[in-house]
Image (tube, rainbow, N blue to C red; front, side, top):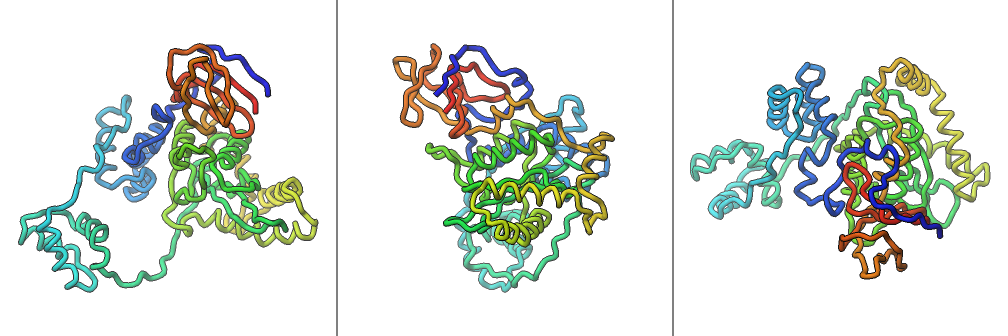
Length: 418
């Protein structure tokens, strides 16, 4: 075990370049997660609104990228036009709608079963006419489905064609997912983490891990960000792929990822369905059809051997002309990188990656200026605080800091290598 003495006020070089990335205890409340200011970087919101106002994005696309309703989109655009230089998205005020009155519930219980399928505009009209209770059709539909699901029926959905066009530039959007599969013979299945640039089709990151945990994804992104820079948007499924956090204090892995990505200035968008992220799903099918056979032929028995074959296949795929685009992914990436038309952000300094791609927890300070962490006691520099924060890289290292990090590294009270 190697100890680096803590020095108050010391922060790694370059750490001041980070963005705000958390609350006082490193978590977000359920209400905060729905607020635009806590979900997406302000610069990304500003760019989307500018593109929408200029006609480069339609209302549906812009509201989808921001995860807001169309009415909220127009409110944000009005705020941008009113103050172009100082605009920053504010809190929307949250959900103020509680339970509807009992007489409204009684009416819905008697009226909804009479319709097959329900006509929500008729329900809204009757609520206004009979009860003087005025609500939009969409609000009536959402409330009926949430509170009277057993009373409403709908015709079976027809298969829907999902069509999503490629982004215009490299770095605008990265698709990311994981696949648990028997990639090579072993007692347990292995997990492949994969990230693909939406425009070029370049595989920007791929790695095998033993478990689908938050920390394993953080390590995967650190390698991808360190090699290529930061994308504007990271596009995933509903975050179930990120798995449980390695922390034992009940931290929410969704909050961990929102905090880390927003701190690095990367927007996070959630795909509404598996079909909506078809590029990454097709990559997994390609790898399953090739890697399993290659590894069986090579007699792979360890993760190190498997990584070598994975790197070979990623290089092959990145250098192969795509039938969809007619171009080579690596050539598209290199061309837009050299001529400056890509949207990739610069590679962050290692200290910022250390800060944001980490797990967080807090600990009480003992009377002898020590803290207890993972069954051991660790000395820290003198501090007047009763609780301190820990920036943790599981199995590698951790820092004890004065308070939960936000924009920059706080004063470091101690650093240890595990």
